[in-house]
Structures are given as C-alpha cells and as structure tokens.
Image (cartoon, rainbow, N blue to C red; front, side, top):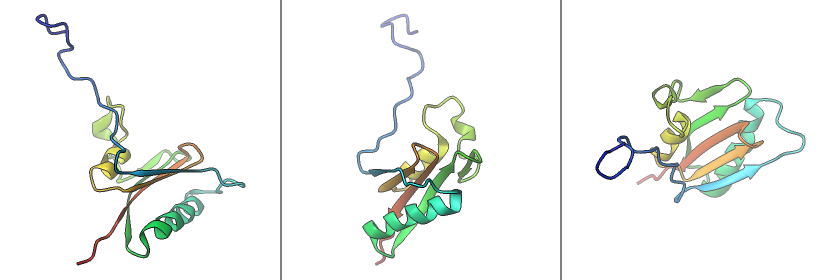
Length: 114
C-alpha cells in the first residue's frame, strides 16, 4: 500500500478490453470432436463476417491445454488475462469465437488489402 493515499503500490490488472471485438459464443450439438472440427466452425464464422480476407491471430484448446502463439501465457502468469487473449486483442482482433464455454477460443481479424 502507498502510505500517502492507501492505494496499492502496484496497479491492479485491468480486465481485457473487448470494445472493438464481436464476441460470438457457440454451443454446437453435437460438440466438436476435436480442435480441428472446432476450428472449421470458427473459420466459417470469420468467413461469414470478413469474406475471404481474414487471419486467425490466436487460439486456445482447453482439451489439450494448448495455445497459439505458443508460450504466450508464460509472461502472464500472475495476470487475469491469458496470453492468447492479450495477443489477439493487441494484434487487431475484431472477432472472438468461443466454442463450448471456453473449450476452444479463436481470435480473428480482417485482412485489409490495399
């Protein structure tokens, strides 16, 4: 604590800012068998919103506890924001597709070609 004004000496982590991101939650029945099937569903959502010009920025597979970019969460060990979320948001994500309440999460951005 800061003795002068009773505020914490270190700032508290801020929650992620999803203001410019469309968040889509899918609960397909039957549930996807694996990551590849989930990615096909998420890619279809990106294609529906951005046409053929989109990029998958980051993702998480809870079944395997695997993320991309790999090791993105290592520097977020004490953070409330997982590395794959931080990476997606800070690299222009405009769409987050969450399949199965966090089982698979994908971040996409449109590709703007000049």
